[in-house]
Length: 267
Ligand code: PXL
Image (cartoon, rainbow, N blue to C red; front, side):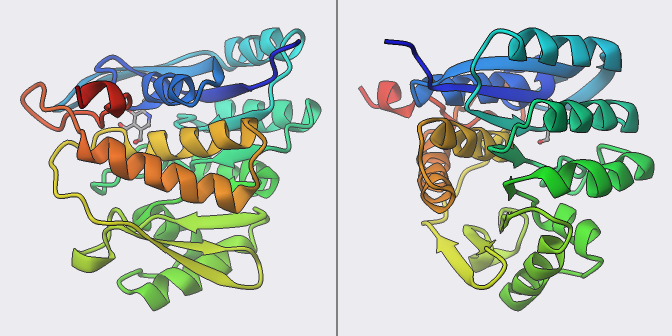
């Protein structure tokens, strides 16, 4: 019988193995989903931070997508760090061309610690070309502030921002509370165009959170590739990330990765 649990990540490489492509492929594998990958940029980074970033030419990004799509039956896609306007426009055009509707867009613009990762032209293209094609959009607090033009400090702010961001064209919006203060840390807000759901899990007190956002969007895409409905896919992905955080890896001198294969770590 042909195997159809296949997902694609379009994202950057993290040499430290915590975020980006490396986090995504581990997350797919954990879910028994075959992972394909399109690399948009290469970061030289470790647990202490990013030293250097090198982009991949957009024609090579296009060639990677075409090679996969011409042969492999991809069920769901996630996008992560797309780096610049040129790559965002190429990826957006390819997603339209291949009719990739099971699309999770992690609008990587600002890290969950508040560091800006892409320029204003790239943000404008994300808004007009990629986000309208998203099934599920997963901004963190800072990205939600940019996309909504609101200052987000409370649950009410998160709900209002979700409504504004929904109008950019994504079918579902999940605003992540990881960048919020105190008791809103583990609280995410889901909006489907009509109603909100407040998703809560226990807050894990750990320093080792590197790759949390990438892992969440990859787990959502994996669940979509397994045939789950969007809201179920998100709830289960959030539980996965919470447990992976519980088993965060104490390694390097800085922020270690979440434990993607936590069942193997317990024995
Ligand atoms: O968390 C955003 C992110 C995504 N992908 C890669 C990154 C980062 C942040 O540094 O390096 C490759």
